Image (tube, rainbow, N blue to C red):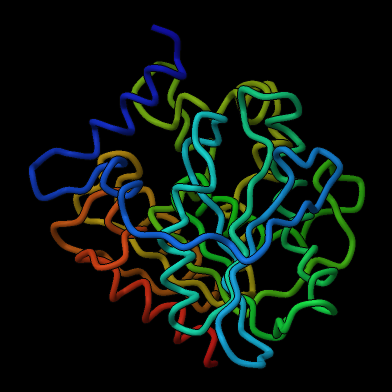
Length: 294
């Protein structure tokens, strides 16, 4: 069994320590509506694209920028977040659900996974003249590995201009919602199969002792305070990104002076946080609403 098959099985099975916890198939079976338009933000249009959904009315509409997870692996795509994108559109938000190059496909990993997410976020400026988007009210929301990338968007203005990940003039965010988000690749890394941590070295091209600068520049934990309001939401029973991993980041960000909140949802695992109607969904809705209404 190769590692991608193993991690697929892990995602399908390990998030169910009890019958009450949700799994990937339940997410994929949720009702969705098609995107209004699929837009390429880069030349590799089979992976560098986003799905834009627009609510009714003239706008301009606040924007929820959605970043899917899946261990940064090519086995998972933005369809994991279609139900979320559909629900937020019904609530009156424009949603920009993005795809990006991932480990296991050409160009995936360092630095292009990060550069793609940055380019997709900044592409909202290109979309705004043609679609009624309010770029003063953009919230990034990501799940798991996507939560890591959402937090990373909030720190990229700290990167030096000689960084492989540097891009000028990042799009400002009104806030960040990290759902079961990985906050620090180095401390999440494991060197045997068992969680998304076994993909970290592939994402970054090696181990921390081989690429300390890459690990530093990929770590939201190493860059607090981000200076952008953040709400971290995790299931208390999450076996994939344990609550303790998120709590460490929360304490560091709070002590550094960030405006940050941690919401732990009892009886929730890894996937409830992306499932409309779940035990965790009210917390997710409230987080987006509060950040956008600031």
